[in-house]
Length: 594
Image (tube, rainbow, N blue to C red; front, side, top):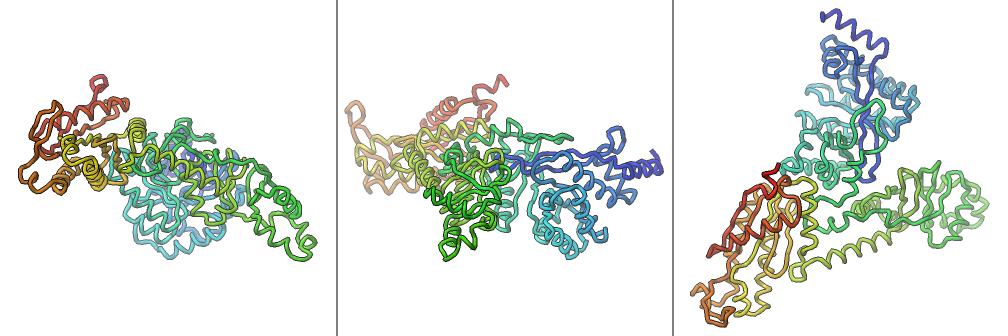
């Protein structure tokens, strides 16, 4: 196709508004609901400019990028409004276009108004750009848009070198993590650390992250467990002209499952399957126009109510706190002054609203962030975005306490480490998520003779020493340490340097254990005591055996297979006369069949 034909074809597309818009859902990981949609533009299906790369490359070559950008925004807004899609619409725009068009804020707000959308439902997604443009001018434009209600998102964080500068200058409400960092995050600890650092920055500056390119359940689990609020990708929903209004069933099952354990060794796992629906209380609600005196009478008739939800067409829009309303009506002539005023005059327009599927652990964090009012007056619980009832801070605290008691029931009383049940659950979660890890079985050699000579109290001290060394040498945010019982421990390593950590464990134990012996026994390298047959026998000082097995989820399907393999590796390690590590690198009982 010649240059003139290409130019004519692109002009025809722009003049006849032949831009097609596909929408890809963005999932709220805390509520399990669709937060909004990214608008993705295409040329006509029968055109050589159908593919976006070809369409925008041609526009750039012909100097029509600004015209194409605005045409895509207009088409996205019109199609989004025509379908009455829920949530927000994320539309892509280049910073160059924002700087090139005169009075661009008015132009964009005009397009939003023409589509019949509230500005607060529109998010401008700025793509990466080359350095050298006017950051100050761009900041003035985005501040003007923000003042009108439009929010700003920054696309593909990490893809280009200018992204952190753009984040710092524009202070966007949303930041999208480039799919490069999400791809393989469940298997790559380095990517995990990068994303964790990005999340910490976002929390510090009040931005929400969106993980792009989520294509596997294990990726979604990791993104969720890191505390990232939103995610987007084929696993959640594919782009479509008529997009899904609910996340994929696979994504819902993933969000409803227990946490995979990005933060193993903490109590967070014990709260993984308990959700806000367990706290749901049926409670009356009022409309924004309900007279305040009727709300007062409702509260007086229900002394247990600390707050009442304000609901408009089934959806919560505010909350009225008992203390606030009572403070108004306790004064002289208050009914005459305030009684007929609508309830919206007394409501808090920014209540804490959570979906009934919100995890208890996440809910506790939301309550803390919201502040004292959310704890004392409670929060609103919804089902599919519609009012379902109320939840109280007291019930939340009681539920968390009960969960911690249950978790403590399964902990080893000597070390406080997770016992057999949490160990099994953690292994099963890792296998279900398709995560690779290394199971290390730790056992003390010649420990029974030590107990016979020195007593159980000293034996417990040595066990506690080993538990402390294992915890110290594990990476808290990646690895899991469990205490099977007695002198048997398990470490589930996801740290890439797990083998070096094992050698440091052996070294630390050999350096620390001599403190538990008398000087004469240290000098002799052991002691004499009765063996199991009642005969005197010389026993060496206690040493440590570590049996490690690399767990490939393709080769292992159950907890029992992992446990058997780790026990066999431990048995091999115990053949050594001194502290030793044995590594079984076979791929498991099912590897040959795959």
